[in-house]
Amino acid sequence: MALSLEEQIRIDLAATFRIVAHLGMHEAVANHFSAAVSADGKQFLTNPKWKHFSRIRASDLLLLDADDASCASHPQVDSTAWSIHGQIHQRLPDARVVLHLHPVYTTAVACLAKPEVPPIDQNTARYFNRIAVDEMYGGMADTEEEGARLVSLLDGKRRLLMGNHGVMVIGSDIGEAFDDIWTLERACQILVTAWSTGQPLRVLSDEVAERTARGWEQITDFSRQHFDEMKQLMIEADPSVLD
Image (cartoon, rainbow, N blue to C red; front, side, top):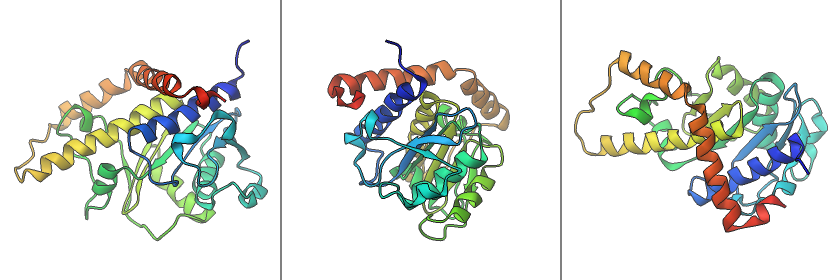
């Protein structure tokens, strides 16, 4: 029997949590992912409060409505998840997927006095002129006002480098969003390693960086296949992700 759209999204999103845990990009039982299931983007799935990414099953995901304020008081809904993801899904119908993490290298770059990802290789060039930056960290993002502020900072971009905090990526589907946040962490790992040598960086020209970034945008099938391969590894390791 064919899966419904929501059932497929549940499986894909649950697999994403497990992939991220497998890769060590998670943080304790914090951070949240979400994926829209309605045409207007306002009904969305997200992870329950304080459940480890490596244990999340498709059936564990909560179905919330960004227009329903009562969701904020649900005992399994984390206040930061509702504040950030609820506002994004309410205000940006094209944001079908929202991934928020505190991965080590991307967060380290976000903590610099001037958070930026200069194009020094193919991975970093993927983000040339394509990252919004938040430099106004004010503590836990647990209010709808803070969520709305973060939405306004995106300004048409799909990645937000959250100063002194972490990173957020939005996407049109789960595969693309996963590959995006994975590549950004890899890019920052390369960048931090290059900086650690103490040698000057050889930064790509604007022309080459832009051409490379556009090249990335033309191979979304690569991103989806990366996700599909990782998802299959998770299913083979522990089929409970499908439950």
